[in-house]
Image 1 (cartoon, chains in turn brown, purple):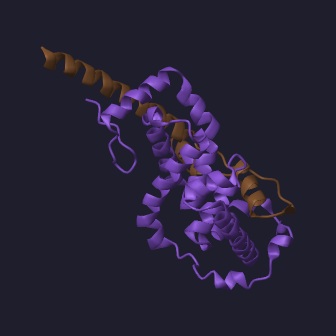
Image 2: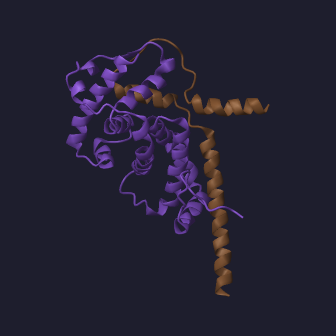
Image 3: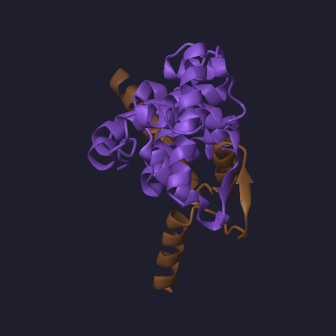
Length: 74
Length: 193
């Protein structure tokens, strides 16, 4: 199980590209190729999870600062 | 005890700024901001840095910085442009220490000046499966300036004026350099099937 979850994480990193259909493709220029590439790119869900965690920490820090300020006033 | 919040490179976020981040999150604006722009920022970081793990870290850091500085956003630029500015600065800082050691971009533009103008004909890819790798190799072979210009111009939300502002160039200079960047990209792309 542990092996599977680790493999899944690795696939998320390495395989940032969705499975694409094989076959001939033509692009009118670099921008079109890059746009297509961007559309195929999957943003790792890990980023959102880490961000949520970071914001949670910010909130916790704020609460701490608020309490500290209250005690310092006294 | 909770550790101070810091970006992936260990830079702590200022306490004063963090207030706005939490406030904005409470209003639900941050999720929307992330959902609308995360793909563009991640893609820029991915192809600029050429490393999925670094791109992940950079995207996290860029949005964390953006969340904490939301009160500094004056609305003079659109949000996408503002996020790109943070992302470019962040990636450049990372790139200065990493990219220069690992990637040897071909700065000799003269080679591509004399190359046939292949942008006139479509870029052909036999198997789109390997397109990402091929694009990455091609971008890695370009100068940082060309790479960035192409990545920005590929985003249809950005105008030439906005791209010019982001890279610190006039619109005419952007157009001129883009022309050369396209030629360089096409030449490298064809060269590395």
